[in-house]
Image (cartoon, rainbow over all chains, first blue to last red; front, top):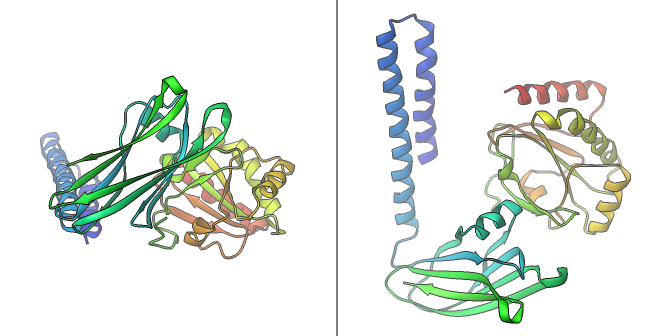
Length: 177
Length: 148
């Protein structure tokens, strides 16, 4: 529905300059029309944003919302290939990383790998990290976390960092309220 | 992987991420702004080699003006795909879809299948094995997309 509405408004906005081109008009009138088109385009963008937020609120209410994020600190000892996330034994995400995405993570980007709903109570979140360790060796590591889901939204961060003393990667799980 | 919609002409190309025979991962949406040709193939498909070679020629001709060619291989053994791609002299990435999730989303029931995707990420044409006349049609489609 949202896509249809936005497409329609975008089509209207896009068609306006074409219509203006057909009939010669004074410069002032043309400039007013351009401003109107720009304003309409801005409204479409704003509307899209509001609908996106409304959709998120409806689909993932705070009372049941849980989100899992991936971040990376340096990553010298581990070249990430993919992350698989399981919640209560069910796979909810399996993400393959491209070089561009890894660069973004290394520069401090945080990726939301999964957003879902869980009812209140205890849940098990398991994350499997696959990639290459030191000396180009295949490396797979899993971490498990018991999450107590309360009334508010829950945020889980999966962080890959370097344990310099042991020359090993480290996989940390952190829960944010 | 979400396979909500089947890929047909005029619709948005379903996004995917796959590993290549070289071990690099590719995501289709990272090629927004470029014209993408997906070539679905397998080692057991007789007509596929001809298309692989054709698209290598096209890549060499149009690569500098924004054409990206991605081979999508359906074999279960990556070694087979790599060997055949090497023998055919392919310089573009060969992505491994042994789980066949991507080929299902693109309805690649008959091989070879060529899918042309425009700079906005929409599917603009689908072709199977090409004869001479169809090749001319493909070239027209391709040049139009590059000119857009």
